[in-house]
Length: 407
Ligand SMILES: Cc1ncc(COP(=O)(O)O)c(C=O)c1O
Image (cartoon, rainbow, N blue to C red; front, side, top):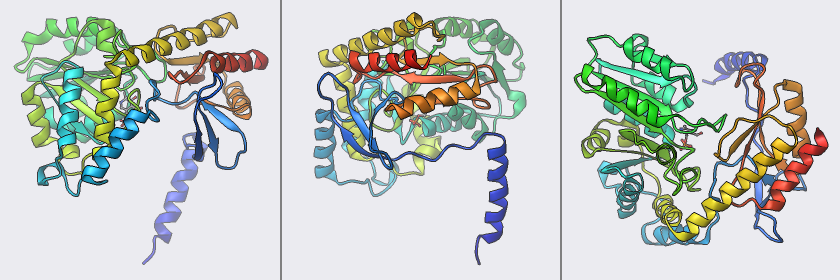
């Protein structure tokens, strides 16, 4: 037996993907982390390159991944309990660090309870498996993250029970709600807090108000769910994310520990009953080993730091550097999408120019993400810059200088 015949078919499929421009480029490998020094943030060494790079493509907005307190917490947990849980949660794979992280994140987002997952991706899938029924209608923003779209698919939501509203268009959300069949018992409205390709945020206060006005039409009401993976830790006055920024809290909050908090893992936070339903029904929680205790201990430490004066300083620095970068783009006459989030898209609006600029930045030691068709519509070609708290004014000015030279 061999996979020769399968490989042939897969090669054809991969060629088709390549012809459609849908394949990912080869993965670069980071070989060394060079700590910050001389008013410069950290640098990274890549395999096959002798130069040092700045990362302007990292989601680790608070730059906590290399924080000594997180490393110490992970190290202590590992020394006490080892590197892996040995089983799934319900077969004695639950350690005190899992429970502590669940309590800590629930408190952080001000919900009665939370369940943690290996990632926000599996958290979305687990939530959908837990709350979907034959009489559940799902409504989502057109630009929702792939994990939400996948979540709806794996929970077998038929297309008749789904509505998609145009990005952040509240009239269209109402249209979707009006279209829900009277036989439906439960409506779930789900949206990203921050849209990661654009850095803009959902108008959560408006969404929550609109959903409330439809609440009485359905036996189980209208449940609002925000996936605030890019907002939690990085956005709002105290890092509580987009709900804090909008001053409106959806019923359920999904998020990740793998972005602003700099670690790994995801969570679903909501009522105690919802959390118990997740524990009983979410296959992506039940049938898979949990995060390591090292991840959990580091994530708890990251949340503690976010809630401390140190965290406030980091957040303030992040906001200042984001504003510095955005103002620099304005001065250069470069187009972006306005907003305070550290995802700063540079609208290039041309495929070849986007590729050329990404290459130019790479050649000059800056890692960014270029987004071209079919990831974004033709004409919306973008370079996504992500500001992190480790960036110094010198780093920001260096990138702005390169952009000025390129222009
Ligand atoms: C909205 C949203 N949800 C989920 C994820 C996935 O997060 P994780 O890496 O924890 O699975 C992302 C990451 O890009 C995201 O933007």
